[in-house]
Length: 178
Image 1 (tube, rainbow, N blue to C red):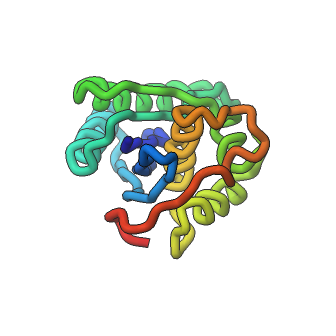
Image 2 (image 1 turned 90 degrees about the vertical axis):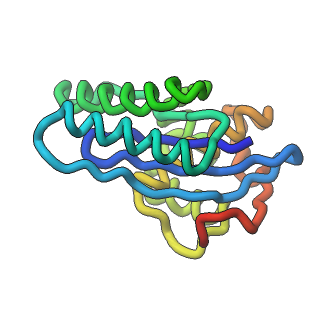
């Protein structure tokens, strides 16, 4: 199964693609960011939508997984984030992909082992789990973490497992480089 993880944003949307084999092994395929410029929100959302469509076409995932929005201090930012999420979700739905959603707490618990991990801990564990040669960009790391979380969930490892991350096996040889 190939999983596309999305870390939505109205300025930077991170993506990460992993592949899960029948054996449960997880391998890195690709990651990066869709960077959006300009002040017009509608145009930025169009770039997010088209960027996710392009990623879907290129990497052919079987599922799209995305981080749920949380209400932060700034309501305007939360609304824009929600709209970026919607653009990414619509791209997946329009390509007939099932969509799964996880909270930041669930993602951190699956990757690091506890839900209140710092961003640097998530980046470090993503690098270690996928045996990447370098540290991924923050938004790409969050998207890869979201995809890894789905892999845990789909494999039955369980979201509440304290040691979920080390149970994944890594497979080398996927495109995307390390």
